[in-house]
Length: 33
Image 1 (cartoon, rainbow, N blue to C red):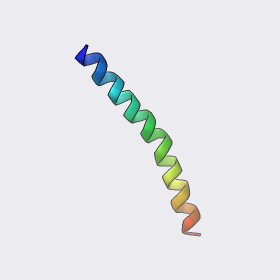
Image 2: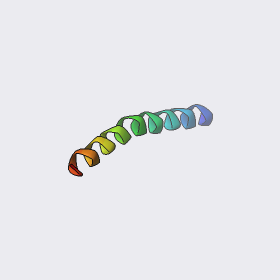
Image 3: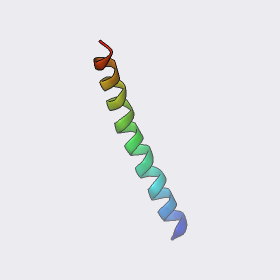
Image 4: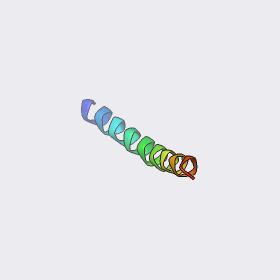
């Protein structure tokens, strides 16, 4: 149960990073123009 919860937490963090990092990168790129 704990292992499954940890795996779910890691997966959700990775998914969040995969969405937020490109968003932040593109935002910073446009702001630097």
